[in-house]
Length: 177
Ligand SMILES: [Mg+2]
Image 1 (cartoon, rainbow, N blue to C red):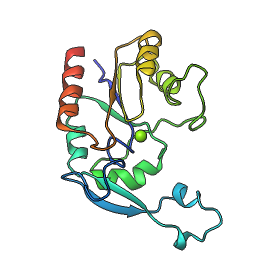
Image 2: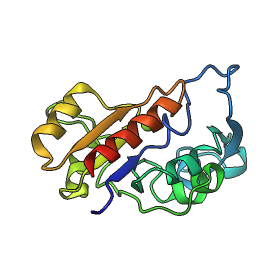
Image 3: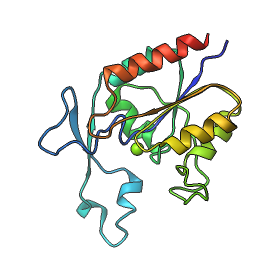
């Protein structure tokens, strides 16, 4: 049986951006990066004057994710830049990326902007979606429209992925097979 997909967001699950600035979560390293898409947000400023983006990344997370019985896929606004900037810091190889037709668009039913596209992208394969922004309406819609099992795992962006989340992901995938 093919493994389920693990559709992985960056900001929230891997980078707990909402943690208090003076309370960097245990196990995380601080990185300051300037990916092209970040610099492009400040079109009137020369790149060297753009303040870097602060990232907190836990290098144990890559190996822990790779040990799970899933096929890992980036599902993040970082898109391909996740492979350039996040993979090396977190300890992951280059991963396939969900590419979005549009970012942050409003949804007529109040769904998260990723939800419909993820279900289409998964094309009937079981998946776990790990994100800090999913809501109950997304769970309901996915259950009604995705023809295979799906786990929507919401992560607190103040803490990032925790041991219990890895355990949940493992249990869910094992129960599938
Ligand atoms: Mg996020």
